[in-house]
Amino acid sequence: MHSDVFARIEYIEKWIDDCYKRNDLNSFDVIMDIAIESGNYLREMIILCSGIASDDKNGKEIKGFDLHEAVIVGHMVRIYKMYDQIVFFVAENKGEISSIFFRLLFETYVKMKYFMLRGPDSIDSFIKCSFKAPMKNYNYIVGQEDDGVLDTIGKRVINKIENRLRFVNLSIEEMVSNRNWKIDG
Image 1: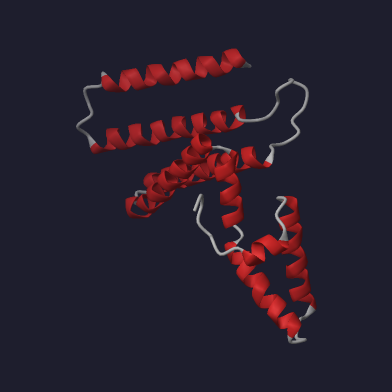
Image 2: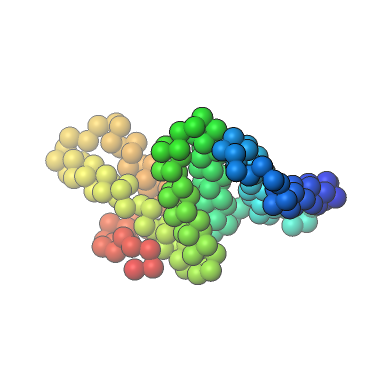
């Protein structure tokens, strides 16, 4: 399998080198063909890199990612999905729509790189900050409970938020009292 991957990478490198040697790069159609083809190769490399990020360290089974790894891999998946949409809209000749995704893709890349460089403390801060909207809902629903108007849907929402907090080892008391919703803030 590894030899197949390396052969594919070598093929793509050769294709890139050959693009520099072309004499017909003054045609819009040729440039668009190259852009779409290079987009497909980039998509292929993103998938490959995401696959390499698996935790199959002993070659026997994949048990999943720990919480910190999952945040990084989640950003990789988001980059892939946005890039896929960029290529789709470029191929459909809808550059104005694809340009929206470029900024989101870049922001996601910057965050992913930041988390990779800063490590677990920053990722923990990111996870904590991701509960800002759910905690706002939680506080509102708990307020309804105090007024005696809480319905079964509200109880279900409270249970779901509390279960998610337990899953990431955060206490409800800590999150209710939290006033800092900035990453590493």
